[in-house]
Length: 70
Image (cartoon, rainbow, N blue to C red; front, side, top):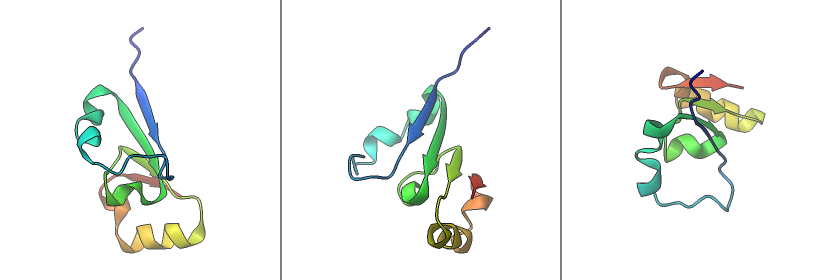
């Protein structure tokens, strides 16, 4: 069995805001993110956890760029 890495990225204050480290992260596994992460980086899968964020992500058509779970 071959294992593939998965990266889970939040959008809280502890996440570095520099985009350089995000550029190639998809090369090393599947990337899961949440909420406003898509403004800086588009993960393979993204989750929105409140109605306001979900509505904004729908307006921004995030679901056309990646898989969006609300």
